[in-house]
Length: 58
Image (cartoon, rainbow, N blue to C red; front, side, top):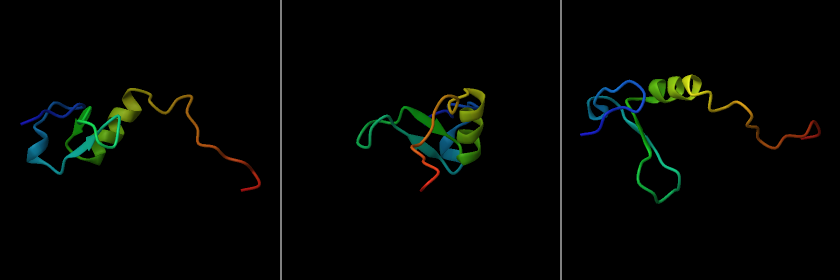
């Protein structure tokens, strides 16, 4: 049994989402569902300063 990285609930009781630093790696984050994952991303401000490559001509 594992606890949600964001809210602390048991992830197995929900529709869990697991994230990892590498495709073959062990989970570095466990979330109840995509809602908790999205809330964690917002709360930790993980998108600040990041961007995909983009060009106006694309």
